[in-house]
Amino acid sequence: MSPNYLRPAELFDGLRLHQNENTGGCSPKVVEALANMPRDRVGFYPAYKAMEAAAAKYFGVDQDHLVLTNGLDEGIMALSVACLRPKPGGPVPEAVIPEPTFEIYNVDTDVAGGREVTVPPAPDFAFPLDAVLAAITPATRVAFLTNPNNPTGQMLSKADVKAVAKAVPPEAIVFLDEAYAEFAGETFIPELPQFPNVIVGRTFSKAFGLAGLRVGALIGDPDRLAPIVRAIPVYSVSVAAATALPAALEDGAYLDDYLRQVKESKALLYKACDTLGLTYWKSGGNFVLVRIGDRSKDVIAALAAKKIYIRDRSNDAGCAGCVRIATGQVAHTQQLIAALEEVLCAAR
Ligand SMILES: Cc1ncc(COP(=O)(O)O)c(C=O)c1O
Image (spheres, rainbow, N blue to C red):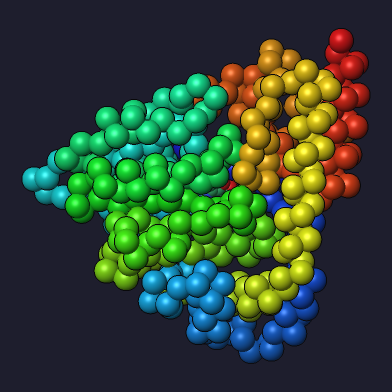
């Protein structure tokens, strides 16, 4: 049984680089839309048409190929409930989970009553295709894939996704989590018509900075989505999220500026790691996994004392001594780098 997911401490008094959020928050247009929301809307159950139309346009899919959820977390739970609950007399449904990855897959598999079939990391966290294919059995009902992966930032090729999609049993779903797709600039969505057993997960928490509003999406074949939709409460997305999303999607300039800053931030952090002699993995996301080594916990604590929060990932498979650092606005990354240099030089 996987351990419960423990929410990270509520650290709001400094620089939050530990949850891969948008360090600059959401577009000002979102705040404007929320401020202009008529008061009675809060008293009514939400309307979703405008939000669904805006999201479908953004993803380039028909509306019936999309379901919006209360954060992608809810989508992953609904998918797990729909696909991984044991049926009387049937085998225990299995979920293939290449590690290290987003720990919610393990937790949700467990909660649904399925069995976790974890696949250990390959050198340098390259996608372990052969081991994943070897882990698939007639009882496989979900394969959890993540592109770019969290916490490693490693990319997964479309060819590898297709290979897994062809290998799973006909009733299984390949869940492709693209929470960080905007930063990587690529998506599997155009391939979905040829691979109806793949469901893509997306979130507006990261690039769009809507984590506090909780809105995510599942995209895929309507027949494959239908049993998952049954496991999602009817009004799970709040009126605040429904109001905010169209405004966020309209502000392309805000998104583009943030994507540019994340790219620049990653380059700055890579350079600083080179100078400091730290191993890191080039990331497709808005974060970088860095191996600090034996001192990692001390470094996390020293940065926290300066109110800069980064994430300990040393307990993840293959990640001994590693931390994960969000790379958001350039000014924030510069602040982190200056503090990291200070802390590491003091420790020498
Ligand atoms: C890979 C991955 N999937 C899903 C999520 C959850 O996103 P949401 O905030 O939409 O629930 C996260 C959040 O960190 C993530 O890293």
